[in-house]
Image 1 (tube, rainbow, N blue to C red):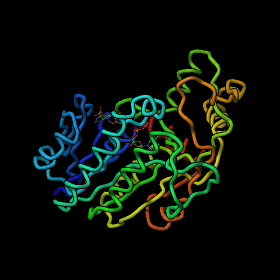
Image 2 (tube, rainbow, N blue to C red; image 1 turned 135 degrees about the horizontal axis):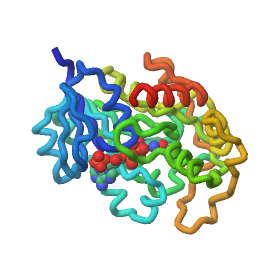
Image 3 (cartoon, rainbow, N blue to C red; image 1 turned 90 degrees about the horizontal axis):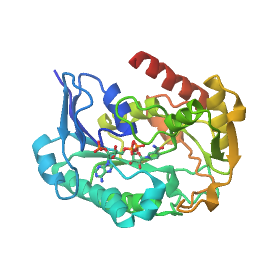
Length: 300
Ligand SMILES: NC(=O)c1ccc[n+]([C@@H]2O[C@H](COP(=O)([O-])OP(=O)(O)OC[C@H]3O[C@@H](n4cnc5c(N)ncnc54)[C@H](OP(=O)(O)O)[C@@H]3O)[C@@H](O)[C@H]2O)c1
C-alpha cells in the first residue's frame, strides 16, 4: 500500500532530482516539470506542465497532494537581479499562490528558501535571526517567507545553505558540476575567498526534505552542513578529493564583475534545530562529498 501523496515542483532541477531519486517506492510521488519525464518507475507520476500562479489551482485540484516540496524557482542570483519582474512572479508570486491553495485544502507545504536571506554581516545565523536582503533574489525569497508566516498554511520554511552535489536526474544549478567541467577543460577554477557558507550535500538535503514532507514540524528550519567554510577553501578541498592539485583553484574578488549581484559575506547557518528534530543525519563537507560521490557511483 502507498503512503501519502507528495508533489515535487521543479522536477528537472538539481535539488528536485535528489528528492525524486531517493523517494521511497512506498510514496505516491508526483512531479511537476516544464520538461518531459526524466524517470519512469512504479509509484511516480510525472506531470509536464508550466507551473505558474495561473495554472497552479487546476494542477493541485487534479493531483490532490498531501504535501508539496516546492523547489521550483529562479535560483540564479544574477539572473534574478537582471530580471526582477520575472523573479518576483516565480519566486514570490507562485509561492504565495501555492500557500493560499494549501491553506484551503490543508496541504502541507515545504518551501525552499535560502541562506542568502541574511545580510551576511555576522554569520552563524539561527532561525529567529532577522533576514535582510542584499540582492533581489533574497528579496523574493524573504517576501515568500513572510507570506507563509502570515498565512494559515501548514508550512515549513526550509532555509537551504549552499548545495554541494552532482545532478542525479536532470541538470540544474550545481556549482560542483561547473567546477568539474572547468577542471576537465584544463582551466583554472576561480572562487571568491570572502564568501562564507555552511554547505549541505544534495543527497542529505533530499533526505531531509522528504522527512519534512512526512513529519509534523511547522516553522523555519535551517538545512545546512556542520562545517563553516569559505568558498575558496571549499573548492580546494573538493579538487583535492577529486585527485587534482589545489593549484587549479585561485581566489579572486568577483565584486567588480559587471552584472554580478551583490553577495552576502558570511551566511553560515546554525543547524541545531534540524539536528535535534530530524532523523536525517547532517554532516560536514568531507562526509557530504563522500555521500555525493557514493550516490553517483551507485546510480551509474
Ligand atoms: N542550489 C543551491 O545552492 C541552493 C541554495 C539555497 C536555496 N536553493 C533553493 O532551492 C531550490 C532548488 O534549487 P536548485 O538548485 O535545484 O535550482 P534549479 O536547479 O535551478 O531548479 C529549479 C527548477 O525550478 C523550475 N523553474 C525554473 N523556472 C521556472 C519558472 N519560470 N516557472 C516554473 N518553474 C520554474 C525548473 O524546473 P522544471 O524546468 O522542471 O519545471 C528548474 O529546474 C530553489 O528554490 C532555490 O532557490 C538552492
